[in-house]
Length: 300
Ligand SMILES: Cc1cc2nc3c(=O)[nH]c(=O)nc-3n(C[C@H](O)[C@H](O)[C@H](O)COP(=O)(O)OP(=O)(O)OC[C@H]3O[C@@H](n4cnc5c(N)ncnc54)[C@H](O)[C@@H]3O)c2cc1C
Image (cartoon, rainbow, N blue to C red; front, side, top):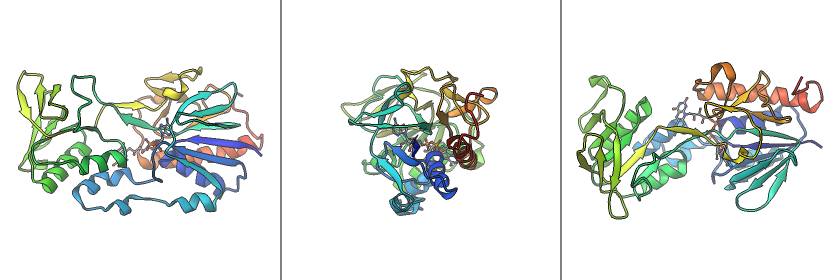
């Protein structure tokens, strides 16, 4: 029996695994996520902050689906190394799993800037449900900083302002239309140079030399691909994305990729929507089924 291992159990990895089974593939499938939970809707995380969505409304599946489909769901385990010669995936927490076909669906994450104080309590790179939960359990009584230039950043600023009744400073490169803003949100076109506080955040120092007292700093931009575990391989990477061919194949035999972590060479800047990620994983399930049957050759 062929062994398919998928790193990442979010939109890309989950849909790939489930569709492989729906299409009748009988390989052993291992689906790995470093998060503790099953697939949830990242698009609803801001509603989770505002209170419009409860935590249970976020989940898009349950662990039963994996049990019923005979998918080995490994949660709460971080992959820290892949050995492409031995076809082995190693976990940070100990242990490893062998593959015949490996799919990297490990996505991208927001990284904290390299500024003084970025590791203090009260500074968050809001990536996962766990990060949002942690922020919501912190005490928010004063001004909050949100750093980001897209609609999500603005919506998060509004959600925090409405829920905690505090002022929000939105650090953005974008000049938002005044009609989109509400009282209590100030858009600031400067950058944060330092985060100040004894243990936890108390203020931020700005690029014009001024300082603002704040109790939390939330970062929603500066994305980086989760590919550190491939560092000892010859995987082709460009502009921080895994390069894939027409069949979502990488340059390493039997290793494929899908989702936000990868791109075609002629389309490196693409930002894939959730729907595009789903279609890509459905396409990859077809490719893998043909591959397992020996109907296509990855390197041909
Ligand atoms: C907070 C947030 C909000 C978003 N909101 C929207 C939106 O409103 N609309 C929209 O269209 N798109 C939105 N996106 C983008 C959209 O979610 C992505 O397009 C989609 O999540 C990409 O799915 P993915 O499966 O490729 O990667 P991800 O969703 O990033 O999932 C990566 C998976 O890989 C796992 N993983 C990573 N590294 C490791 C490792 N070393 N070991 C084990 N597991 C690992 C993670 O645990 C996770 O399961 C949002 C993204 C974020 C982060």
